[in-house]
Image (cartoon, rainbow, N blue to C red; front, top):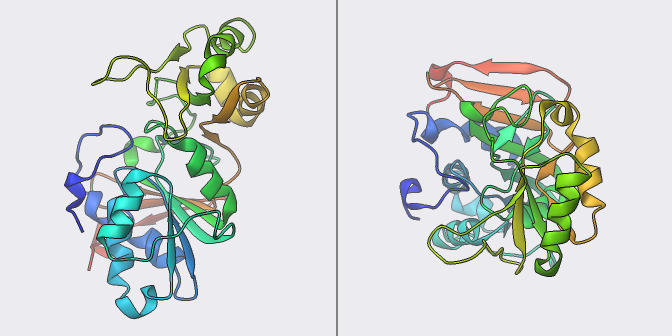
Length: 264
């Protein structure tokens, strides 16, 4: 398996010393021996999720199937020697672990910095248990606090101008823009052949992001919205001091001291 530092992340992040331990508790608590179908998401924390799953042993993993959300997670699964499957073969998933660009205190999250939130949401919805893993910078009270580029929206190419107009003049995102590629001329194109719009919203929309998510989704031409609302069971955040903060769906917050989180 490639070193985690060699794997592309959802969005560029500054490395932190806690990366190696962040997903350990998430995997240990939620990827149980009886789980046979496991969704693997994308992002800077996910290589360590796969690493920890491999540490559970060849015997327990030989009967499992792993479903990727995109190219990064597919390569991690293949390189780790795990069994690769697809969601059309396994529409019910025991548990999906995924990263996030931001997570609020209600466990709503923004995803799509890596332009694969359509498949990520399919795997999240297909899972009996959906768990988020991220570093402390993604732990915010309201979405849009640190991830300022806006809500990622996947749109069919011929409708992008109409959707942009709707966002600008109807839904209250005057700075919504088509995401442009960095090392290629033209817009970012998703694995599904679609475009991505990034739509920033004011705080009033992010207090209850489910409302604006539903409004965006109703626009003709929108394929999927990078707001994941009321889906996650728990979110695990690795902190700078090596500790881990766990936020649970019921509002409970748990802290695990650094000495108890070291990888084995």
